[in-house]
Length: 272
Image (cartoon, rainbow, N blue to C red):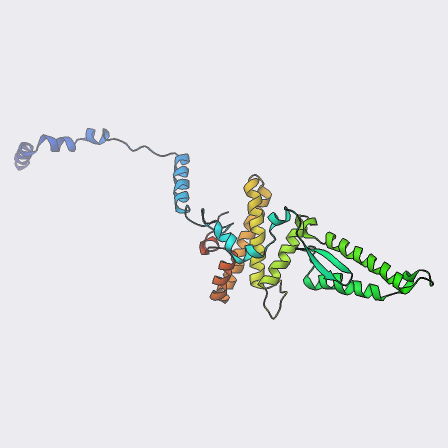
């Protein structure tokens, strides 16, 4: 009896809107959210990843988009061979030597240093001119005539050496060898002026190789073999720089500035 009265009174006070909400048809007629496909989810994730990495510097070139000028101003870029100068007219410098005035190239290849050039163009001709030996020919030939002939021969030899040793005659491997030699000399210490194993030297050589390979892949993006090699070089450089940061943070910061690299381009997760 009590249950019947309670049910009757509750039905009187219940509003029609409340009863409609509690009805099962309201749940069945509710709008359903559309499920995303796997492809759509992947596109959303890729777009989110692009937005996050839009302002990060390139792990290959080390700078952000629009800030490529930082590379041209860094120390490493200034010591490398300027290939634009090699494509122009030859720049020769007249130098007075014991055999006469010789036109020497502004940049010498094949690893010829200033010391080597001094030996080839100054000391070697002097030693050849002092040596008489079998070049005297006939014993009746006057010494002055023989000396003039030897001097003329050494003069032609010096000019030939100058043309051969011009860096303009070097191929891509010769230019790369010259760049590596300059990097080793520039990043070594005064105590050891040629130290290929120094951390700064190794990082600079890797940066030089990475930029060359990156420029190549920008022209030929389907070269997958070299892209794998580029990834290995980028992670190898990051490993070397992490070691230098643990050893000396001051040297690490200085080297990043000299190489034209941002911290974000060599730290954290690197995706090439």
